Image (tube, rainbow, N blue to C red):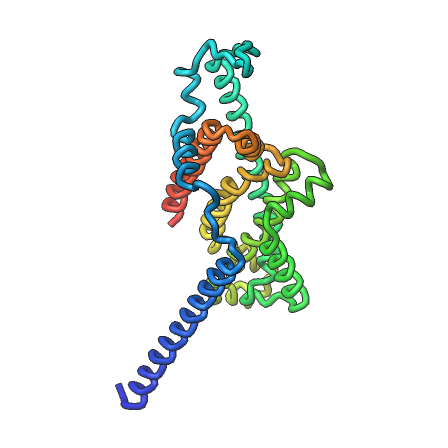
Length: 297
């Protein structure tokens, strides 16, 4: 290696480290500003008796409500302050009915995530083709497509859901559309990056024989990017399963409605049951999607 090349190599490494240190310093200053302003506004308080509240909440979470299906009191009495029996219920039957409703809500959540993810992928595909720089789409169309994807990715699913509930009403349809519109932005970015990572030799070879843009896409682009598209779809789908669990908070149905009911009534045992179902559902899908991605690699 010549002296000039060695000097350039040292300078590039030094400037790269300086750049990284500069970005790290900016990040540290941002964190300090966040902590400092919150402390000055007295917004970092843990409230009254945080330890006692934590112990009580953990204790209730440690007894998920589904255990009452087997161990619940079959003759539980609710009394007034003067000892009058107000009602008697069989906790085992009540929780069995609750678990049946939980199963239906879980199925609704899966349907919202599945159909919303598919809708987002279908909407994103043509926009990703337009924004991929190596396909050289007309600039006005490329800018318009990129703008649509950026807007969709910037607006949270809950915001889409709030607007769509007012348009199409309560129910899963609003959740599906909210998931689809937000996911469109994520899918578009991932799909475009997959296309841009292609070897242009195959694309140029198809173009050189006079192929139309559609023929170029389906003969040179699509076969190469399909495994990455499937992997991206599985990743976003898994994320949307988690995301769709909270859409019930705004009336879109699914597990979010049960979460809202449990938290509003301080039923931490039932909330624990719902969270266990969510964890099991996400973990199962993660295992399945990982195996699919390994099969594609």
